Picture 1 (cartoon, helix red, strand yellow):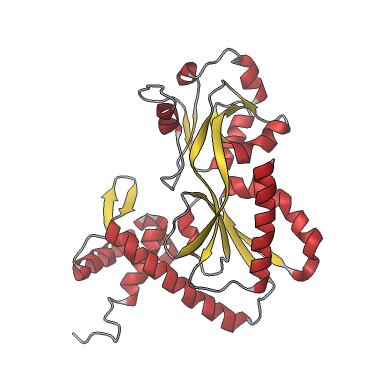
Picture 2 (tube, rainbow, N blue to C red):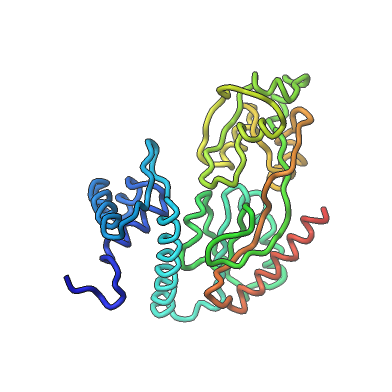
Length: 304
């Protein structure tokens, strides 16, 4: 077989792998690529055979990347994103006023978007800000994204990261629920309906690890599971149960009387919020201006 100049597997197989890794799902990758899940599985199996290493661990609820898969995905995502960026620049011409920011759903809704009017007040029509809002950080690899605000530990492949502010966690619920359970203690949380978030990233804390960190032993936890953090907060506001409140995202809702703390349980989150951007690409002057504005907003948040 004649190998290509770069000695790579087929681009089709690499495209299928990248989509599967981004979604952590053969089914979702198949839907995106308009093929069947079995076709995706065959391409991935062939790629693993050619490379000589496993790229995924197959699970009942999807797939998980191996260390080799993570390494390959980081390289492909970076390369595909850069190629997409160049193609779009050629097709659409000057986009020097455009800046795209990526962040999680709840963070965008509660922290970022309410502050955006201050950016417009300072700079008016000089800046056009687009948003990629997703709780799945694999979406943050998209080519058009200039800046990312993300929770974690400050280290992501091929990115520069700058600390913005820390985080604190405590249980929250609707005011009516808090009044009805005014005598609740940290230990009695196990008897209440808990609202769980199916986080995509392992750095986010769920009820099980939160309670263990507080020294509260437990078995199977009660409650409902939701796939988005913002929806979980909406359920808590309407007295449907108790959610873990991430202070930077819930204190505005507490100040507005939409949420209330329940019990005195409180602890620092293991990670923090960071601003990141691709280390392989120079930010435009407009993106640098928005980065500086985000630094100013974060300094205010830290001192609040």
